[in-house]
Image (cartoon, rainbow, N blue to C red; front, side, top):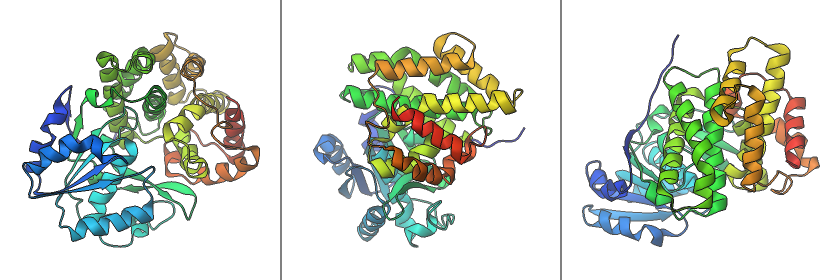
Length: 383
């Protein structure tokens, strides 16, 4: 048995957002505040930071962070002399914050550092200290070691990755997510479930990631529907915030799988939300993995993990019980299929080819060839 485990320092609970400025003051004096496309929603934090910092520079992020734009923004942050980053928002905002923190101190071309489409070089210098505060419950980006960036020139999403990119502090306040609309609550929650499940069946799972995955999946099973139906249910929001945090901790140490491998090119091709793509794929990837394991590797430990997933989600220790649960959950939450998200049959071959090279595929419990990846996409076209 051999494994590593790294994670962020965590402040969790309602009201913890009010500690962000004081925590940032411990890390630097010239703050880069990374927000979503409407920075006025973070005016309260900008005011708090301005009360303790020498300077606060607000940098809004609109949509998916693009590699070229992030590199340009890092140049600005470097010129401003920023020495601490605070990122408050959804997964894209947190990923942008992590990339900016890394690129302010690492000055080579961004494609020198990017996986898949670049050279994948390690960072030469530690990133700036970063505080990450999620406003959604799904990506777990506040505890992961990578930033997912869109390379528009290559038509794929790829990662800037380093163990040092794990945020210095994750401030997880469930109250920040109570205004999240139902569709986004569903999509991000299903992304968290995907990450927990993929880390649980991954060949890189460990005795430290397993309890996080088990607990997180149980929380999603009991609380996601409630969080979608009643956004101000703080108990449900807390369950989902914790499940998301656990999913980030788990995937940072145990890897992901074919859902995220396929989502990497689809996100660039379709422009749809990452969580929605993962939700549309999840039951079909589960079913494909189970079929390959049963046919070719009937004693594989991941097959028992899929059975345990059925127990955690549906109360039935059977691998396909988990698949049925996810299908029903997606149906109840109104998850759109890949066709509705913009995928056509003519795009399937290209998507499957690009997915095969995605870094997330390395964690899948079995290898899925081009034919199986294409078949998954075709099944997910119509749900």
